[in-house]
Every structure is written in structure tokens, then in C-alpha cells.
Image (cartoon, rainbow, N blue to C red; front, top):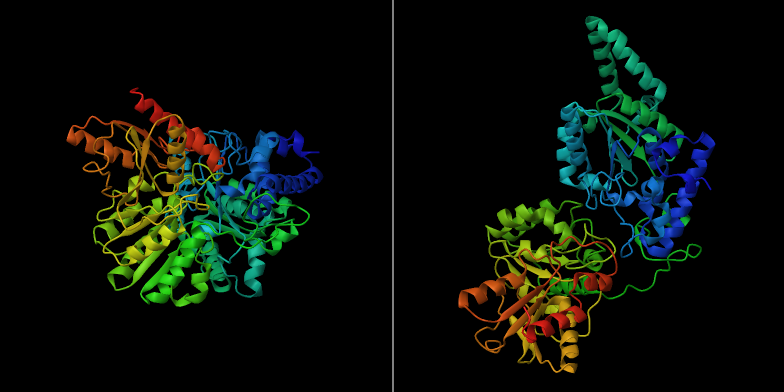
Length: 612
């Protein structure tokens, strides 16, 4: 097996053409076998195998900088850089990350779990290289889906005009970015991608370029002919030398073109056409289904069971009910129709459904405009992706007091996708937004009730809910800002959302030890009602358990309230600390972060016994 002996780019370069072709097959098989056991992103990685091998044949990822965007294309890259023996731990607690991370390997130059940022990162690295006089090459691999994100065009605009030696590879596996019109245009595209053409072009520039009058005339004629037969290309207008489209599954051709692209020593856009799921028929037939998968049987493929009810599905149901009652309700998503539970809404109310692509910033501002002109927009978005729209949240929504409702999905711990996707920061940043009301339902019925209240409210409202299913607590306490679920005299456990199940379980454990702990459930996280003037006034100790980062957490609000009052209540805050949480199952991560029921009970017991 060739793959077992590959540890670096140097090993890939040492292969013969036949061995290189065989390596591609082994990589594809290894990805399928491993992901079928651990789960992960499948279709994208299968489509990028030949491209990744070609990159390693041309670049040295230990010293050069190759950035994959989005990083779920990187599985073959990880296997080629000494991580094959650990690939069975992919996305498992303590195992390999599903995305590139420099903390795992020096062959990963940066963290890349969110789309559209690779060109900006790559240009920054190129400029640092130039200023430092370093000797390394820079390459960014960006998927066509990531090009729906506006920040990608900011990076491309600057990169094309920079003059830096940098190659941007557009991995086009879904949509046509640059339309080729007519047989001559297609022919010229093929010619322009041939190594012989690139070598001739360099010769032409070096030799004819010495005779400036002759070069000016011939170059003008060439450009005139090109623009007649080939429509204007936006990448060339940005300043890139455009190559392509190139067959992304012809490794030898890719390698030759990429080598010549690198040799041009200027901004180059290499347009590569690939097939998602390449080499595994079920994934080729349905790349969306095989985009992100759980463990599955390779021979049978994914058996499409009935959708499991979770918070996203419950949100979608509540949205359909709200739209039926109120014609002003509209739903917005950023390329996550299915993930946010809006598929049924899109089918029933297509005129009120808007998928803007990977454009969270735009979505937030657009929602503000919709709200300010009479609609009731609801933006369903993952917590970690809403981070990208923070400026718009403050400027366009908060300052304008625009009545936008945010369905903040995947709040808290999400599990195997790891640190780039954990919803650790939403409590802190949403509580900063002027006029924002932040609600935290603990179950499906509360989600429906709170959505109804949010649509009837004034100003911006966000509902924070987790990935996955509800827990044992299924009562609806949403009418009040907070609810005392359990009485106690020795301490109080304060929590909210899905974490209330851990709080109640901890109280049960403590009762077995003779410690009577109250449980206070917060429904509203902005201006939270801690009941310090009523039931909890005499309780000597409190533990606030949250699945968010420490900065801006609700526990800090309680600490401030106690300090203002000069209260003697002992307080311990359990949360996600810095908010940088690795990958693993949610249960494993709760234990590791110390916010599971056992950890909560231990903290309460410590405080109730008078310990600091």
C-alpha cells in the first residue's frame, strides 16, 4: 500500500506517475472507509483527492502555505501529512479535528472551519513573506460555495491588485462561475490551460517584452482577439491571470498546470472543475446527503430514515405555524435551509423564504431593511455563523431597534465539528446588542411559545437553542423571565436552555447527600431575573451553569448584582471558559468542561460546605 509510506509532500513527489495514480485510489478508499466509521464530511473530500495530490506534488506544505476553504476538503491532505494512523480518531474526543488546525500539524497554516476567508488569509501570508524576504509559496483552495460569501470577494479584489506571487484554486464542484460561450471560447480555455501555452507565454514575455513597441502591438492584438471570443472574466478584471476550466480529476494535467501557475509569480486564479463524491457512486448521485454524514454501511450507503425531531425541526414547525397566522412573517437562511429546519417553510411559503447563500452579514442587514419596511423577518442561523454579522447586529439592527427575530441554532456545544462550530460566544455578543432581548427555550414547546412572543414583541429578539433533541424537562415556563423549578435552602443552581436538565439532575444527586439545592431556570438572558428580592434572597450559595464562554456570561451579571448589593452569597460560575472547545461528543465535552450534572453537583457541595 503506497499511502502507508507517505508522511510528507516529499514522499508524494518521489512517486512515479503510476504510483501517483494508485495513491489517488487509495486515498479515496481510505476516506470512505474511515468516514463511514467515524462520520464526517465525505462528498467534498472525495472530490478534492486528485487536486490535493497535485498540490503536494507541486508544493511542500511543511514550508509553503496551502489553505483549504472550507476546511472539510482537507481529509486527503491530512492523510498525506503523517496523520493516516490517527485518522480513525477523526472528530472523536482527543482525536483528529475535522478541519485544518495548526495546533495539530505544521502542515495546516491556519484554522479554517468557516467559509470564504482563505484568500484574505493567503494574501496576508504572502505579504508577510514579501516583507520578511522569506522563501515560500502561497496557495488558497476555495470552493465555489465559499464564493457566495462577500469576504471572499474582498480578498480577491485586494489580492488581484497586489502583484503578490499567489495561486488561488477555485474548486468548482457545483455551479458555473465563468460562462464559456461558443466553441472557440471553450477551445481557447483548453489551450490556455496547457503547460505548453504557459511556457510559451513566459518565453513571449521574456523575449518579445524586451522590444517594447513590438510587445505593445502584439499584446494589444492578442487582448482584442481574446475579448471578442471570450466574455470578460471577473477574475481577470480583478487582476488575476485566469486559467481554466481544468479537469480536476486529471492529476497529471492538474500538476502541470499548477506548476506553471506557480512559476508565473503573480496572482493566478486556477479554475478547477471537480465532482463532489467522486469515486463513491451514492455520494456522486446525492452529494448533499453525503456532505456531512454519521457512521454508515459502505456497501448499503446511507439509509434515509424518517427525520428525527430535534430543535431545528421544532423551529421549522413553529415557523410554518407562525407564517400561517401572520402574512408578514418571512424566513431567511444563509445556505442552511435544511440544517435550520426551514425546508417545509420554503415549500409552503416560497415567496416569503430567502436563502442568501453564505452571506450572514448581508442577511442581518437585509433583515433590518425588511423589518423597517413592515415585515417580520426571522433569520435562522447557526450561532457560530451569526458571529460574522456582529457589526450589522449592532449598527443595522440594534441602533435602529429593528424588529428582527433571530433563530440562533446550534447554540452551546455542538460536538464533533469542534472549536470553529461550537456556539460558545452568542450569549456574550448578543447581550451586547442595543435593545436585544435574548430568550433561551429549554424544549420544543417553549421554543414555539417564545417564537410567538418574539414575533409580537418590539425591537430585536433572539432565541438561543441547541443542536439535537430536548431533554427530560418538557414543561412550558416561558411566560415569566425566570422560573423556580425546585425549592431549596442550602444553595441555588441557576441555568437555562438545554442545560436546565443538567441542573435538575445535579439537584437530585445533591438531595441524596442531604443538600437541598434550589433550581432557578432563566428564560430571558438580557436583564435576567435572579429573584434576589424574593425566593433566593436568603440562600447562601449559588452555582451558575452555562454552555457559553465566560466572557459576557450570565454568571457575570449575577456577580455584578451581588457586588452592588453587598450580598454575602457565595458564587461559582461553571461555563466554557475561553470558549475554545475541541471536538467530541456533547456528553464528553460537558464532562471535560465541567458543566455536566456531576460537576455541577460537586461545585454546589463545595460551596454548601463553606469552601471557597
